[in-house]
Length: 257
Ligand SMILES: Nc1ncnc2c1ncn2[C@@H]1O[C@H](COP(=O)(O)OP(=O)(O)O)[C@@H](O)[C@H]1O
Ligand SMILES: [Mg+2]
Image (cartoon, rainbow, N blue to C red; front, top):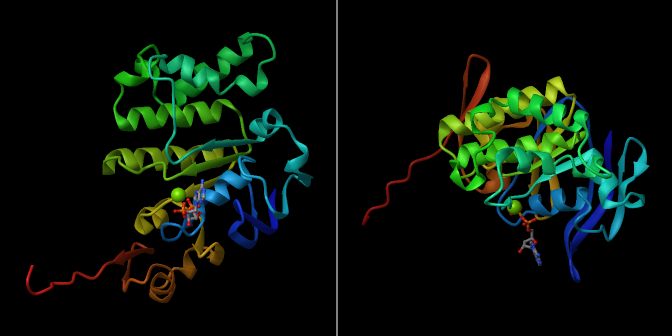
């Protein structure tokens, strides 16, 4: 449903993304992986229309997104940036309501409020609903920002490193939520992640990026020591537990430290 063809994108004269071809389907969680600077954030920003492609096309349900206004795109695509901003002194409820903005022409309707209430309930945010954003923990804030993205009722959810800086319990809770809404709302969910093991636990499909290109994409069968070596330049071993792969990383003991 989201089809990217021969996409070139970047900043000024510099091409960061160099001829990407990929298609994203609904109901699937995609993990976008790759070293710092490989173009992951640039890919998400280009899909969301924040950066205009230099060449190539992005289509959603067969329509070119460049023909849509930012407001129209926001009805189809929700984007949670790597460094997201929220209004610090507004309440959780008002923050999530902001996600309805693309759908609201004058003022929120009863239906808008019902949508927000359902999301607050589904994400177990009821007890924080009238708390101010700056009074929440990192994990709670991230859940609110995901709730705001869901309030847009998008078809595509783009999340740039949504679990960075969170403790393991919150990482798992957030990824569980994302996995659940992907299936229940039939979204194409594209998550930039650094933790390969978390990716293997929660994603259905893996997109490895390197130097602005898609190095390899596929299901978990593509995750092999050789791909990790070629993309990240680290040696890993892979073990299987209950049919799931786990990567173990080498521990080097340097003399002198
Ligand atoms: N606003 C910008 N202006 C110029 N260059 C940028 C900008 N943002 C990112 N870049 C460059 O684009 C490349 C890819 O960056 P990015 O997409 O953020 O990588 P990743 O998210 O994979 O770490 C990097 O070389 C980075 O320095
Ligand atoms: Mg990035």
